[in-house]
Every structure is written in C-alpha cells, then in structure tokens.
Amino acid sequence: MSQDPYELLGVGRDADADAVKKAYRRLARQYHPDVNPDPEAQEKFKEISRAYEILSDPQKRAAYDRGGDPFGGAGAGFGQGPGFSFTDIMDAFFGGAGGAAQGGRGPRSRERRGQDALIRIEVELAEAAFGVARELVVDTAVRCSTCDGEGAAPGSHAMPCDTCHGAGEVAHVQRSFLGEIRTLRPCAACRGFGTIIPDPCRECSGDGRVRARRTLTVKIPAGVDTGTRVQLTGEGEVGPGGGPAGDLYVEIHVAQHEVFTRNGNDLHCTVTLPMTAAALGTVLTLPTLEADVVADGDEPETDIETSLDLDVRPGTQSGSEQVLRGRGVPGLRGGRGDLVVTVIVETPTRLDPRQEELLRELAGIRDEERPSGQVHPTSRSMFGRLRDAFNQH
Image 1 (cartoon, helix red, strand yellow):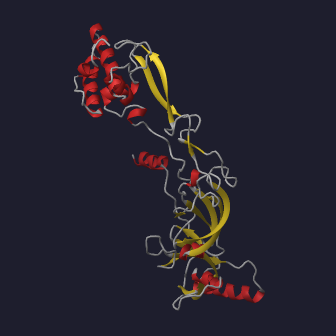
Image 2: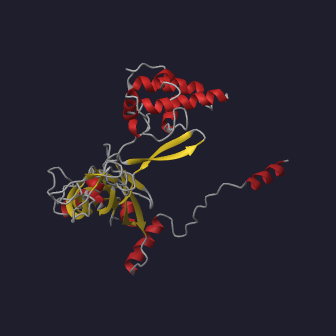
C-alpha cells in the first residue's frame, strides 16, 4: 500500500465506525470531483475512498491490521481502482445511511394491510330516518385458520433466503469513472421478503388468507340519506400474510316512499281536496313516518304518533303549502326537519242535475254566472319600455 488508510482519513487506530464515517464525509466534501475539479484532488479522492472501503469493513480492516491484504490478494494495490459504495458518496453530501453493511432498507414484511371493501344496501325511508340494525352477509378475505396467517404448512416455518441471507436485497456493482458503484435491489429469489416458505400452506397457498362468507351486524344511524357510507373498522379484506384487515364501507340507498318524498331533512307530501272542502275548510288526518315503524312490527315507544291532524283553513287555494314543524327526518347532527304538505283542489268533471242546479244557484248568489276573469299583466319587455319612453317625447 502506498499510504496508511488511518493517516489518509486522519483517524486513530482505535477509531470506531462512526468516527471513520465522519472523517470520510469531511474529506469527500473537500476532494470529490464534482466539488474540486483539480486532477490532484481526484487522485486524493480515490485514495480516501479506498481507505474508507477498508476501514468501514470489519473484515478488511482486521486483515489490514494483521499486515495482510485486505482485498484477499485480488492484485489491486492501495490507491488503484477504488471500490467504494455509491451510497457512501451520497452519505458524504446528504448524511444518509450507508449501503447494506450500514443498514439499508432491509427485508419487507409479508404482512400488509388489506384493502377496504364496499357493499351497498337498500333501506326504507323510515329506517333511514330513525335508524336500523341490519345483518349483512359479506364475502371477504379472512385470516387462514390452518396456518394462522403465516403462510407455511403446519409444522414448518419460513426460512432465511440463501441468496440474500435474510437481507431482502442484494448489491449490484457497476463500474463508472468514479470506480465501482454499488446499488441495492430487492432480492429476486425471495421477492424482497428475506425469507422463503419451502412448504406453503395448502389451504391458502402461502398467502396467509382465504375467502370466506360471514355474517355481521351493521347499525345504521338515524338521519342517513342515499349516498351515506357507514364505516365498519377492521371488517374489510384481511391483508396478505395475514396482515390487518381494511375497513368495510356500507353505502346506503333509500327506497322511494309511496306517500313522502325527501328533500334534505324535510318531507314533502301532497293531499287532494274537493273544492267544497277547500272552500269551507276541513280537518284531515295524515299518516306520519313513524307509522311505518309500527307497521313493520317494531315495538313502538309510548309517545309515538302514527297520525296527525292537518287543519285546512276555509278558502285554501290549490297549490298552497302548509308546513308542520319538526315532523320531517331527524338530522345526523341533531334536530329534525319539517313536513311540507301541498294542497291540490280538485274540480269535479261530472255533475248530476241536482249538483249542477245547486252550483248554478251558488254562482247566481255570488254573481259569478258570467265571470270576466282577471288578466294579470306580465312585466313589459325592454323594447316596450323604450317605445313608451319615445312616445312620451
């Protein structure tokens, strides 16, 4: 060797690995060709890189301290053909971890989180309004009970990979103008796991999970609407290697109701009245949404109302609306919407002689035998207003 590696790096013979690395980083920042283009600096960088290669490797360092060839007689003298790691150069500038010997990425775990699952169900309007518990049958991946998610057949276990020796990655060396550049890649033999399953479980084929059908109960809160998703944590797909399960999302679709339509938390319905009832006024009995709960056979509360009275005032016009406060759908965050009732006045299309006689008599009393009708002017156009303005002048 042309020079002592300890002297080149400026460290003592008792220096630990951290001191050696710090010394190399300091010198690399000073002599690296990208920083210092001087040819002498390039030669100096090769020498300190070679020195770092020796002192950072416990076996090579021990061989040098014993007076032997740290490169096992490969014929390369000190200062010739540097074999430093590319990741060590990155260390010098960015302070990252070194190569495989200094703690690379390491093997990846066979256990991974499973995917989320989605299932859609249809509920009645009353169920969406007041909440309901439903039993669902789902078909998802579950942990294999034969191997308990390990993937190996009973009585066997995963073994360290002979190619990467359990590291999960192997080094690939390329030559460049800087010398040998070493990069780490996932091991192809074990796919980066660091272990190989010589005898896979026959039930799950080594995946650690199988598909199974199971039944679970979902509680749908009051106030949900079409498109609402209820999250069941940990009830989705079990991950590869028996990893933790994802979540199950239950998407709600609310079926159409024969009486009520929903707009947000408000309910809407329409009632049809004969013209006599609209003119004289009346009281109607309307069903409530709670009536559906009772009709389904559920045990009602003591104060539940299955109907309510609607007071139709005399002279009610067709198309008018009446709002019943707090009779709509409960909100997810509290409160309750309204019930909006639209009144449609029905005009009779067929009259018997007596009915016609009475109506004509009423029309005479009200002086309505030949009504002229009222024509309401619409807003004039811009051109009409301009024409009137010119005519005034």
